[in-house]
Image 1 (tube, helix red, strand yellow):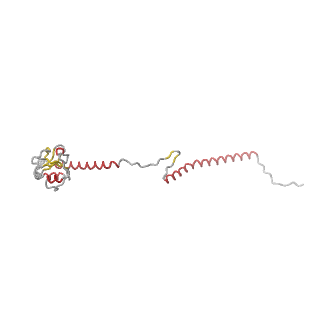
Image 2: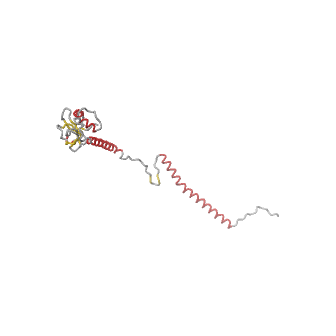
Image 3: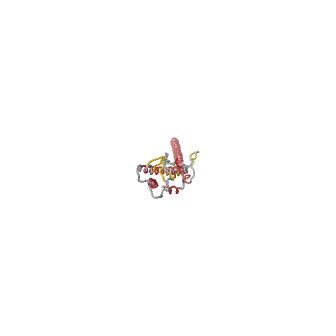
Length: 205
């Protein structure tokens, strides 16, 4: 009887099988570690993208459990100080003009060139002339006349009813005036030096 011929039997050594199983386990573990690591790395990226999408939409992104408050521009108090600054600047400019007028008038002390020309003397002190023909005309044109001539502020014009043309002097603010016709020349005299004071007014120049 003839024996049947079959495919040769491939025997697997027991040690080789064990090593194969171990290698497979190690490979699976390695692949699992890489997968876990990839997930861990991609999480911040996903969060960043989500946050970017939220910011683009105008919403407030959340970080963990804490919401990030949107930054808002609070109004400052600088705008409220603008009128005060403007007023202070105007007062400073007025004070500078008055000081310049007084300095200019005082530089003429001792001069007789303004005798009987008091209105011109005061106007020249403010760097102008020709506005009024006389002191009394200047006084009558003033819309705000103040009668307390003894307390005329610095730089105010003090008027007197000394004649048909009147008289005007420039107050120093301390009970004195600088004036023409003060002992027949430009000089500094008490505010009551001239007769019949009418009052004072701010110079419109």
